[in-house]
Image: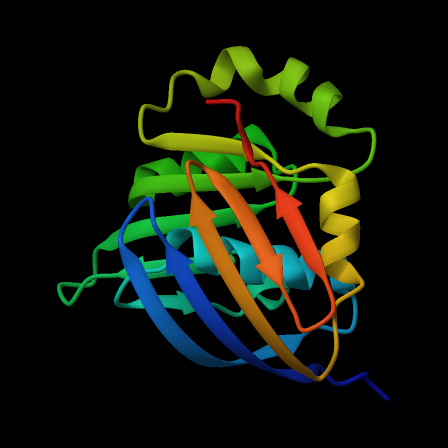
Length: 178
């Protein structure tokens, strides 16, 4: 018997002072059985960092030909493609060819630097690609917030992110690699 996704309800209050986006969201996320709490929360963080009209969660782990998040225009052009993790160059090339803008958020304990060193020379060819590294300790702290009903306030200012609940405050400083 196949395991079913876990449904998460998220109340997100976003204050992005860098992009002047101030909005409340009621989101429903499906956590694939193989998806870690850390990855789920990074998807939510990526949503906040790229929030715009039309930004949608995709099938994620369930679909090889889709990103984690994307914004598709009314003319069915992919405006924004958001990836997570440490994808291979082939996947990023495909994303860059399909989308006007691609954003990758890397995460992991000891493997980000190795991945970056290996792929860095080839990735500079993609002019529409931005890469941000997320600190392992900060993303683990995010993972500890997972609950079926999450209420978060996320504030973004000067490239720094503060994630707040009633009892927890987490600071995240995404490091732009490219």
